[in-house]
Image (cartoon, rainbow, N blue to C red; front, side):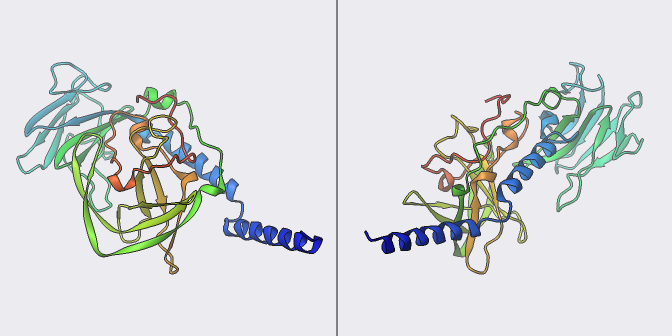
Length: 301
């Protein structure tokens, strides 16, 4: 090879490297580090996922609750006799509180109220006593109380998050392939329940010469794409059930950026009382995604 050819090849390599670097957002590493710090702060909030201490499904009729063993629902912490939740046959629920207990409903000192799940973007009715709180949720058509404690052991003894080193090679540009007609798929959760989800398309990408596809759950027309994934690190270096990955909606160029450096553990990695979705078969990748959040050291898996 002549010196002229050598210099030409060197310039081509430099130009290519510059092109790759130009595709990264400014201060890429700092941005990812900031996102990780923000995620940890969200987890540690007084009402974050680390505060979950119970998930209790209701039966039709009266459901007494409190830490005393004579209750229908025995709580891990809180008053001995908190009160009672009445669930009607149609699934509607109301709470009556023990007047001897210092408690509030949505911040008000009242003794009874309907329990609203907070659907369509609203907030659920929140019942509190000291550091303990609970609200109503629906899982697979079943009503349950989600109980939190701002002074839970999981929060007060949080061990922090572990990550793979930030690697720009895992920031991958995928092709967005819209489906001619939206597909309805079943998404199972960690409890074995199934719910329907709409899928409008798929993200197709290449890694190490192989082609892979991922389908996102559409949580709303303007919401980011939400991928529930697993890979060959699952159950080993990363949480076994799944990791979550979010991506911006496809651009006009039909591209989707999949940044696996932002892959994160679901709430179930930190508490046994969350009800996380599991990856559909299309999202069980046959490669090792050595990027993003690793298994939580204090996890229960």
